[in-house]
Length: 260
Ligand SMILES: *Cc1c(COP(=O)(O)O)cnc(C)c1O
Image 1: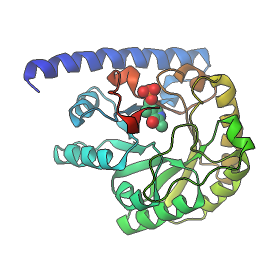
Image 2: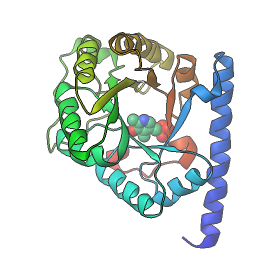
Image 3: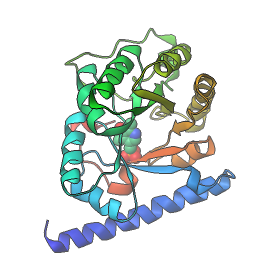
């Protein structure tokens, strides 16, 4: 990028960050909460490491990615440049990617089954690291009715959003399993409001599961909920982490793996 382009991009990102921050502050105030209780995660998927660097320079320290290959590349590029943000892995994850994710991620938001938790625990041990993990809860009410399909392993395509996540009956047992694994720290829950649904209803369901997870480990206080379109509803329901892509970085190119 030429210097001119970089300056224009820096201005765009600064304006977007100011707007998102103002939304978080207003939503927290309306909920009687402190804005400091809500961590902004910039979801940088499809956007270059240079954008992460610009936002890092503006004070953002947490970034999210949903594909291992892209995330690993960005993390390495930034580390070489002396920048080590906290990386949050927020996408559906196959077991054979656990070793790679465990090398750069601080938090994995998408743990929705025992086999994946086991793979991450092994990978964290091998990497000499401890990973914070969130139990991803399905907020799709139809998923509660159907027997959930096993996620594709190991070479299936990442599933569509809304399919991922543990159903309510599995959340407590999965949390207990994670709490018993060395290398992982049970940190809370994550949820995606189903597109087109009522976010308040979805996040209300997430709060119930957040309590179930806190009953397993009192320290598991994170509620990762809310994206560009619904962060206000998420903060109203107690979100501690909002995952914001579009409102910070702009529209993503329509690449199939990233569409949701
Ligand atoms: C892409 C993505 C986001 C960000 O979505 P926006 O609507 O662009 O803010 C949040 N969470 C997950 C899991 C994502 O994949």
